[in-house]
Image 1: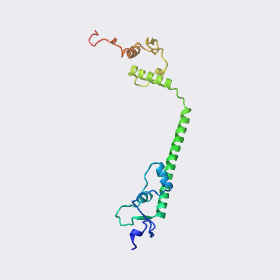
Image 2: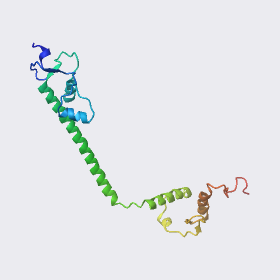
Image 3: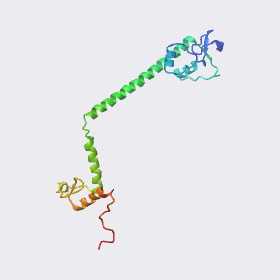
Image 4: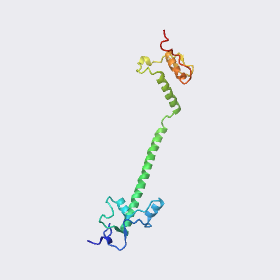
Length: 190
């Protein structure tokens, strides 16, 4: 077998000027410039092997620990290609996401978004849930007809069909105040 110390790990050619695969000196090429601009460290040829192929590289693995300059330059170009591709895909993913966001925005622009009325109606629904908690069954068509609402709350514009509903509703207004409920205590009814 030929002398492994003078053989390139990639092309197996013999050369007097080989680079150690664990040496991370700058080559002064386009990759070096890109790494310098992004403040990344120079990769060793061993790092390039790992990055550009799925074959393992380790010290003392019995394979040549040198690489010739032409093979090293090809690996550096391969890494540059891989980095450029990853950068392009990341950019395209952002453009794709922005396009989806734009489409959603356009859809939402055409919808009726009167949030003030929606918030008011949600507040009214919560109050009605508190007042009308005992009305859980669905109303029949006869019950769904509009009934007269002669009982008006003195504190707000709500009206009710029965005095009991008004009384239940009025407790909402006195809840936070120091005024006590008008409900009689248990045992005082006779």
